[in-house]
Image 1 (cartoon, one colour):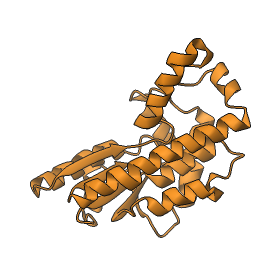
Image 2 (cartoon, helix red, strand yellow):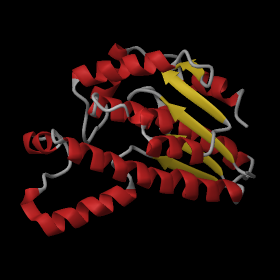
Image 3 (cartoon, one colour):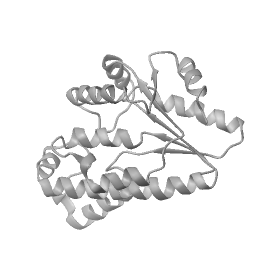
Length: 216
């Protein structure tokens, strides 16, 4: 691959968006083509198109996006959960294995706000009874997705995350309980050697200085 792939992970409020802007400026100074990508499994463009089509056909039988009692009731059905996951993973394969690889082949710097591990955590929180990492389809996604040149994990305490999230707009915010469960999962993966773990309670400039040391 002629391009470079950089991923940033972490709980809400960790400052990923701010750091991505600084990374973009860094590569602009080097006159390198830059592409930003945010992904959340189940909310990717292909899935959104299917949702719109389904709602146009089914009308009010399908609930709107976001948390609702009707949506929770529908998602209690195992076949709905599995179908939703299959569609979500297939669209991620399209994005990661085709779109990102094409960008990298063309020499573009691709910076991902959230990547495979973030999506896995999302799936574990939404469907705790399904071990998605054991699915063949998930393993195919992991195998086909390009490995980042560098992976950063921005960590902040859960209390700071909650404070920062109150100051910004979240269309579908987590409950307090889910925020804490999400934090525990990020904390558990922070011990893996794959990450460059950064204390994101520091100033934005200090965090970027740490990031810049390892930018490819």
